[in-house]
Length: 96
Image 1 (cartoon, one colour):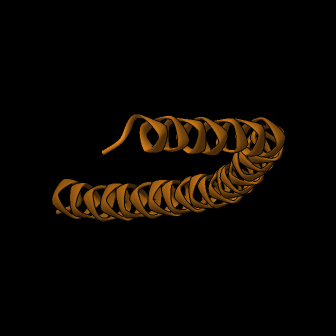
Image 2 (spheres, rainbow, N blue to C red):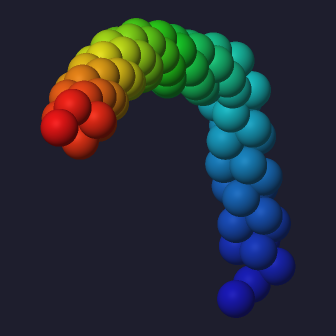
């Protein structure tokens, strides 16, 4: 290649680099803003999911408390019945 063509090629490369840098400098704020908006929307969705999960957890906790209360009542009833039976057996053995 001749020296003249090399200078022309260097000048073209330099112009392409300058244009690329200008485009990057122009588009960089938009890319950053879009990235921030995207991350913000993702965080919003995560927060909504956490709220829904907390509500479901509260519901499950309430259901477990109701179940525990029902089981406690059932056990108390069963113990009462067993005591009643035991008392009737004791009464039957005491009376000849």
